[in-house]
View 1 (tube, rainbow, N blue to C red):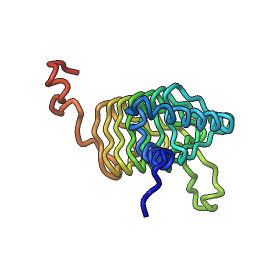
View 2 (cartoon, one colour):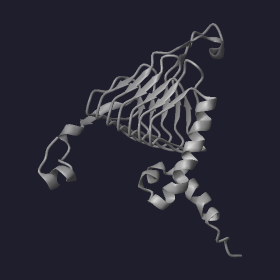
View 3 (cartoon, one colour):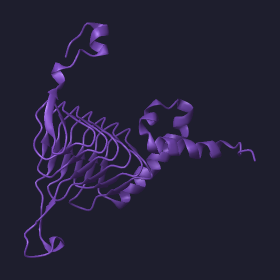
View 4 (cartoon, rainbow, N blue to C red):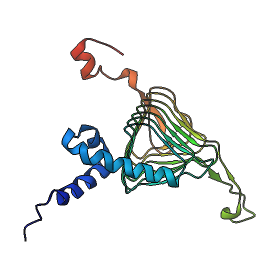
Length: 220
């Protein structure tokens, strides 16, 4: 049986592709933006009526993402940031500009919140939890009070797939967190960390000059 040839049939698949790979939204040709931009605007307007969201221009949010932001737990997103499919985001969250949150991430801001700096890239299945349970042995864990110190992630950070960051951690600017790392302590600027618990294994400034710098003769 041949597939239907209507434009809407292909458009639905295009929307699904964008939902899982939102960076493609920023590469769309004008003819595709004619339907994609109103689609996103309608989705975002509905979300802002239901939740405490502050969204800048050119934000992309997958319709398959779950964003929850009660009063006092706002989610703020800067220009050209995106949230891919199957993400769970619970405020308070402050997300800078040009931030990538790829599919399957789970963020909970607790009471103190999560802050993510500009141009940070977060791969799939990353977990950020800005709260912790008490663990005293005289009562069940679920009955104990939570604590929340907050999580701070700097600008131009790369967090690899499957990594986790615990409450109270601060990650410096330009740091790299390896795939499946579990970050339990602060990470310095430019540090490369890996492992469980994560440890510093390198420094970005020790890496070879990138293609752009080689091509232009410029250095960081």
